[in-house]
Length: 390
Image 1 (spheres, rainbow, N blue to C red):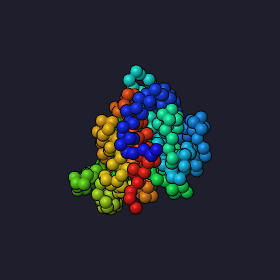
Image 2 (cartoon, rainbow, N blue to C red):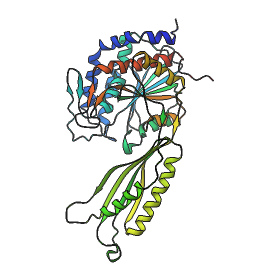
Image 3 (cartoon, one colour):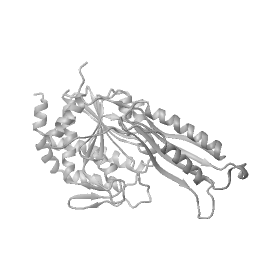
Image 4 (tube, one colour):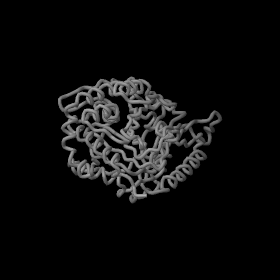
């Protein structure tokens, strides 16, 4: 008998209870992923662990592709359509950081546990969870742990997969550890830029003085802050990092500024980028330093829309679970799905705190609700309730 959307919603409390009965599987996977370093571009150990989990769950077509993604197929009863469920492998922490994950009665604590060890654990545990709950989908599931997502990785793993995938994808669910209630269905326009600053060998001290790279970067920052930034639609210019100098008494000969521009208004990032280029050119001429603007990552504005059936279904599931949706656009892998005309959303699994700190903390109890969101949405997609009318 085919399920209705109402029957899926009515089944959610029982799903939450059933997931709690197999909690140790998810927690064990979260801890093990958390204790494996995975800085961007160095995710190999996590790939091997994910592939081991896929083998243990009886998945098929398990592989690591050329971009470093770990991929597996969980066949559906009919297999006529395919749903993608993915979580990114990398974290913002380098391997030298102590990656110990501490398990408390009510929380997990450790670097990257929210971003994105719990997301990876959910993808790795999904076949077992579905089996234990007795849920069989008609659609195939592609389960993926994507590489090179964060920062200068520029969502390279997801881009590669979608550019080379030959199987039509019905919908995509992107899983993040935090935060429960997150619902992203739109992609922000975004530019991550690096402005490098270097003193040339023929630098003219008589003309420009000897203050060094730091005052040059300071001039750039001051000029960037003078750029008019619209409040609506929301637009932001973020100064993320400045690097320069080696000692108190030596003028820096080189340096760099890392910044990000993001906007919900189409075309605004490009307009601001043009102003940044002009500022860099003017300061280079006036300072005598060699300046270069390098784009480390870009995103285009895009959205599937608030009223898309996929978003409506997710909102209905959250409402039944008493989860208040936190709707915000994404600068992550969702952009690649939207660019490839694949309906997709990004959701968060649990509540937490101290994000991107060494003692990042994830609440255990709310994870079961987050996982129920995924299971409910998979059934809604499988049942055809998330398809747009043709």
